[in-house]
Amino acid sequence: MPKKVLKKIESTTDFSSIIERIKPASEHQSMLSALVYGRSGTGKTAFAGTWPKPMIILDIREKGTETIANIAGIEVVRIDVWEEFEQFYWYLAKGDHKYKSVIIDQISNLQAMAMEKVKRDENLGDHDVFSRRNWGQVSGMLQTWLFNYRDLVEHDAHVLFIAHEKTIEGEDQGDEQIDPNIGARLMPSVVGSINGAVSVIGNTFIRERTNVDDDVRTVQYCMRLGPHAYYTTKIRQPKESETIDTMVNPSFDKITAIMRGEGRKGPKKVVKKGE
Image 1 (cartoon, rainbow, N blue to C red):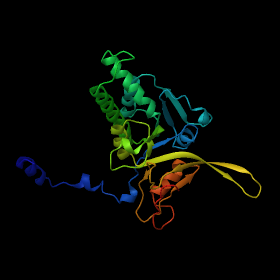
Image 2: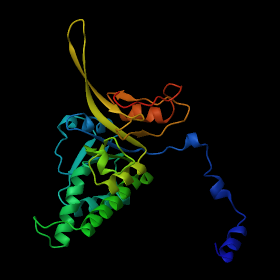
Image 3: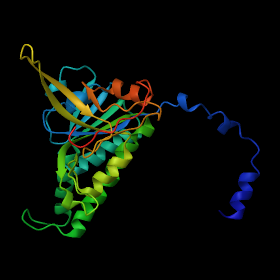
Image 4: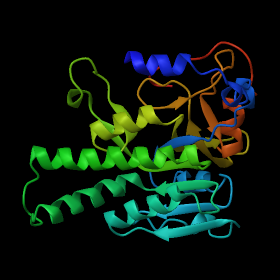
């Protein structure tokens, strides 16, 4: 740092404004950013419907909001081209809105939308091959704008990304990864960035149980959250709290309770492959 800058900082004697902002960590209300992925019909949109209202859902060519259509406080905006995705961000970032939660559904479809924009900008036909530079352009667009939307947490909005599920075979990831990895359906450079940018990553799935006594079949909508051998999952929580492996009927309130350390105390359990 230049000496003249240091001298200016050292000459400051009124620290009252910064001291007033010092608070215990427990008093800082942080907004939640999360990524949830899974197969179609496994409860991703239903989980989104549990987030704080008023809520805005950016429908990226998904048209799958029927399951939450009757919940009060949810509004939907259809996004058909990439330019609309950028435009709506600037509206939200301005801060002159009522929404407590922003849901992007789905970012897998958003990747296809970014590819279409690159094709238009580069005058590529439908059958023209994407070059490495073109893929780099798509990656840059997605990383830049997904991070922009993630940063809406700094404007007092919770942010949830929804994605389809993708299995990456071991040989596609190099010698160090021999097992398949299951995560969001995005190009590797993008999924790696967004995984590190959010506080929670959940995988939705349906679990079926049959009672051996009366042969009655029950269906549970679940979300993987704890460490797993090949499903990409994550939840940031106090170290002394026990990690929950699977949550039945996942909701925003249940997730945030775990992050506050309100769950059970005890050692963390690592799920082994095949469990």
